[in-house]
Image 1 (cartoon, helix red, strand yellow):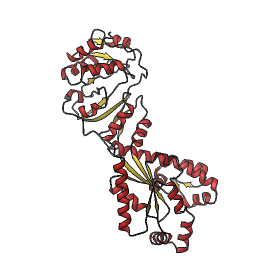
Image 2: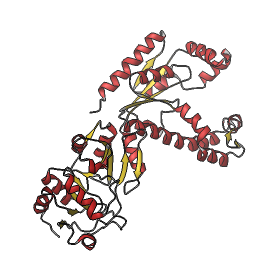
Image 3: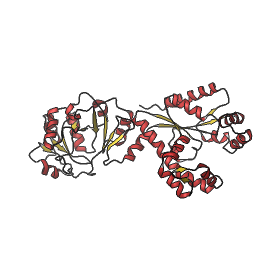
Image 4: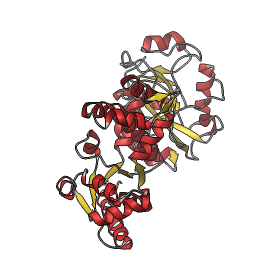
Length: 400
């Protein structure tokens, strides 16, 4: 057992094995770029050769050094959670020995939250292959004494870092595919990973009354490289697929769901003349809609996306507004809106005007939005104005 990190680094550099502390469990470390040293890990542990090894590194620079085609989401997660109990799987650089990858082409990278092990990594100047320091099938060790009980005399040294603070293996997330996958649920919760990815996306809100041109604005955002999210489409999809949401609606509004199908007209009669009932319905559906949006944003970030736009009538004053990088209001003359409603939905002019006048006036959006797109000219002029605004927002908020 040793506290001499320089001595431990010399052992690693000459192909030896050193057990190292982390915040999760103790690891059995060797030079991750030395195939013979890595082979010893497999021999000492009795680890099947078909199981790849992850590599420890002292910081996020490991993503560029030992990965290739690294998605932006990997950098986001490293920024948020390293050092910490998260292993990020990316495409492997060619310098990594095949034995580490078990014949595959991906590698898990991890930055442990242990100052002694981080110092060792810095002194070695090499990544460490370091699976848990136990014989395959045995319990993972949480103290140096437990490591010695397994491997005393079989390895060169153990760095005593005291008891592991977490005692559970790192969470492993695979970012080589979309949507990303949690390969092993460990100390870091999956929800924290998803929220970090979702929060990293610069999100633009698009709002305004019916018939103003929000769909055209969203289409422009998408054409300029943003993920396009139609909140109404998300909600309608949930009404078809989300059993937990339908169960909550049925519990609050008995008879609104029959044989797993939402009866929209029946639900409408129950809520549109009752403000309290409508508030209850919105409270039920809002959390499911936001959760679905978060998933879309997280998958987008994991695949390298940095920007998204969401089209929703009700954004102002909601918790979602606080997450927006910018809120864009779309307005248009009443006559134009009426004509669009008639053409799109086949309603009467009187009905179209009643519907429009029941919604918020232009002044409401002008007061509460960061930017206003006025749709009072040709379709081409409006599209150009949309393109100009979204390009400007993306340039001003470019992610490195």
